[in-house]
Image (cartoon, rainbow over all chains, first blue to last red; front, side, top):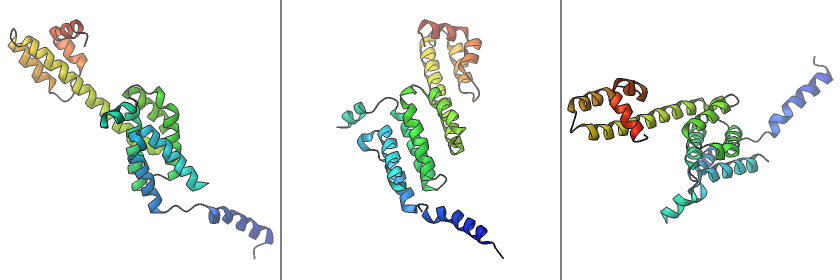
Length: 59
Length: 142
């Protein structure tokens, strides 16, 4: 029989997984497209755009 | 129109392009997470202005490999690219030398061509083996 403390601990451990952002295949493809087709043909800008886009997905 | 775009791109944008294509490829096969790819992208952006040749680019990527082992295949690609660039440069120099020497020394011209096509050849070996080639490079500052 599990003690109430232990059950509480397990629940807490599972909580972040429930809140984690689940990314779909389409988002991986979208990310790849941003990197391959950067604005103004500037790949440095492409990297920056990609970073900003990933941040917007996760936040 | 295309010329405008070329002028807009910084010379070191080619290194950003290598990273972009590599990360895109890794994302498509899900070899890397979006978060990790974004962290790598940010590190490259932070250092892009310091990269002015392939050797510096290789050093940066090798340094990043300590924290991002996903980048290991990219280091191999850069090393291969450096090898190909050096090889092309050497071939060009040998051809210029051959054009110069052919009318007066056919034998040396043919010998250096035969040596230059060998897989493991490098500039130092050719310079040692053919002092005239070494002098030619010094004279023409190649």
